Amino acid sequence: MSVALPADPWVLASGLLLISAVLAAAFAGKVRVPGLLLFLLLGMLIADDGLGLVSLADPEVAQVAGTIGLILVLFEGGLTTKPGDVRRAAAPGALLATVGVLVTAAVVAGGTYLLLDVEPLTAVLIGAVISSTDAAAVFAMLRRAPLPRRLASLLEVESGANDPIAVMLTIGLVATWQGSPTPADWVVFGVVQLVGGAVVGVAVGLGGSWLLSRSALGPAGVYPVVALGVAGVSYGAATVVGGSGFLAVYVTGLVVGARVTLHRPGIQAFHAGLSNTAEVGLFLMLGMLVFPSELPPVVGPAVAVTLVLVLVARPVAVVSCLVWFGYSWRELVFISWVGLRGAVPIVLATFPAVAGYPAGSLIFNVVFFVVLVSAAVQGVSISTAARILGVGQGEQIGPVATGLSLGDSRTELFEVRAVPGLHLVGKRLGELEPAPGLVSTVVRGETSIVPDDDTVVEEGDLVLVVMPRRPDSTRVVTAWAKGEPTG
Image (cartoon, rainbow, N blue to C red; front, side, top):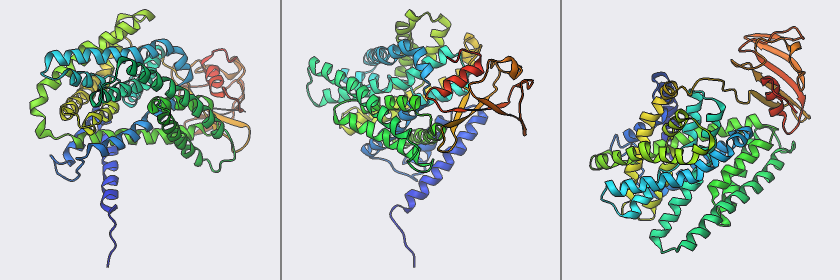
């Protein structure tokens, strides 16, 4: 006698896929191939045109799953975007995330219409779907290829903030096909989406920050779950008022990441894991939705669109938006090259298909090639491009302090990693500016040192600082470690 539930095979398949994806990512790191590319290939291998182990023929199911995955990616992007980076790159990042997306979509649409035998709306839809860069791919790239903070901040802000514009464009264009909106309708739609999403994002972010700063919610493991609920409320509330739920989620993540100090490391670690899992799932899903047998007829057109995007649209958008901010031509070339595409086009490519748009399959196959080329060519060559252009040199030291609340007290313990180039490396504690708290321990390898003024901080040390909790404690400890003013 046995009991079999309908969900049993799906649970087994999901577990095997997750383990396979992690192993693929580890293998990819050793052979210097982007893990997302292997996830695409794994999805194609197990789907209908491959081994036939999993079938995902319903684009509506893929859209729902993709929307959830995109919410997780955007919220985590907001949580991990540093307030200092937002201030540093606010103007150029915002321009590239808005006007840059529109320019990219327009140039790709024009090139697609001229090179391919498609309807104008199809060309514009292709441009809109692939117009934004991918936050998870860019963040992963920055970990592999350290850049000066000026460039890294810009790329982080752009990739986190440009997704909602691409979503709005795609949804609006699908609505245009389904009806006949006037220019005034488009203006109202855009304003409501942007303003509604931003206002709801800030409001829910402030409310969520207040809630997460309370110390009576329960065990520490509850706080990441509450943060996940805050993200869901932000998305849902924005859609109720007609705003952009995706913009709201990202803004809420920014506010929560900047204001919540209690349990912040746990919240960020939890959502980083969710975001990585969502990214893996989205690329697996793209691979499963693609039928390789249908690809040969669209290889030529798809490659043409990809070349227009990479060699024309992205550079035009970057130059037109950033030439006013004093970036060198080398920096502009590098920023143009690192416009990585990823999870967002995967989700957006399902919108025309779900709506029944006649060229939905063509749009999806073109998106597949764009993401494939972006992962295989741009993703592999980031470090090489930075070295050739000479933009990967110099200091890149972000916030090096990680805080941990000590129980329910008003005290925080900060870990400061003595990375190369940090101000305190090679100096005696006595010759540094007074720390904002008590330097309690210096961990060197497997040895814990109780420091005094003559203790010299060595590269690789972990310096532990205990201080009273305050809203800007991470910034203050980081500034002290960098030798910057803490006031």
